[in-house]
Length: 203
Image (cartoon, rainbow, N blue to C red; front, top):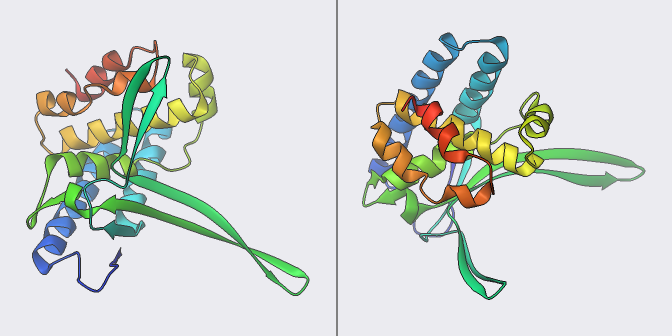
């Protein structure tokens, strides 16, 4: 399901076909990962990610980044760029004395990051795969505690690992996948992120 904003359509027919092709190939790869999963927990996680690919709507914005900001900390100046986000939110509606909770689940993506002309970019593909890998995961709290990570770090780590596994299963070169994650170590502090990603892609 795809949603378009603005008067001029962001998705041309060729862009839509390219995106549909990617999603179809991603679903196929996730089915294969599910089939070869080493345990029931992994099977469930791949199944949930496949459902995300099949059902999560995408909202496109005509820009290269969703947001940018400058961070100053301890005399250092750093740039923070958001390329995509998976939003899970609950809205409460009041009708008389009754309240109703409505859950929304969608992905925000900058169209000029995902597409170059009518083709998908490699960076955009990895970002979209990462956003598809965000969903409520069983046993995540225990995983975070075991490795000394915050819940948010554990969620990001699982999304990185799942998107890396998906990319390799879809046929992207391992070296290219690892290159995409260069610099992500900063998210995890002293945690050996590089080691985990290499293991995820079988490098």
